[in-house]
Length: 187
Image 1 (cartoon, one colour):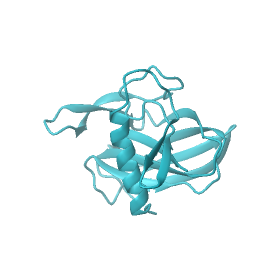
Image 2 (cartoon, one colour; image 1 turned 120 degrees about the vertical axis):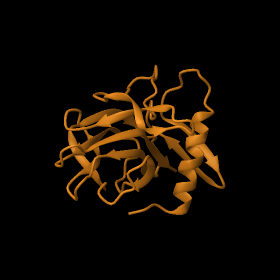
Image 3 (cartoon, one colour; image 1 turned 90 degrees about the horizontal axis):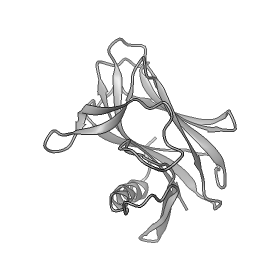
Image 4 (spheres, helix red, strand yellow; image 1 turned 60 degrees about the vertical axis):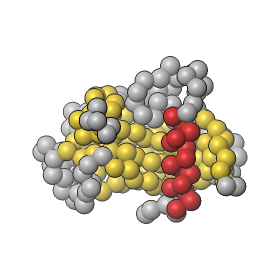
């Protein structure tokens, strides 16, 4: 399921707004941001795995210098590696207490040759209970560092939640470099 062009535009704008944040440690949720009559929050700290003084931060993330996600000059970006030996990471977050919808954006690259069974799974948990899950197929490509956006369907206003990003890997040699995981709350 692909989100609408409006959601993509909001997510794109939010990414550049996060780059423009001052160096002071303002912790998530960031926002609200406004553009063309829409407003949204970003809900996670350290969404690009580049380090943060904000807490909570990612738990269990194996952060590497990615050879798959690089800038124009080939300089590696920080990325969370999902592999058979490092298969998940989590972060706790809170959602503003206002009605809205929640979207997740992943920028990732795939190493190896995945089968239909190899996936990235994004889960939302509340108090130890799985509330919702998105399964990202990786066997169809693209395999280079690219962005994919997905929407959650639940009502999460005012909730205290956890996001878990994990790999379901059954094919030898498959791994994923996640350059960013961004969670947007559209109000």
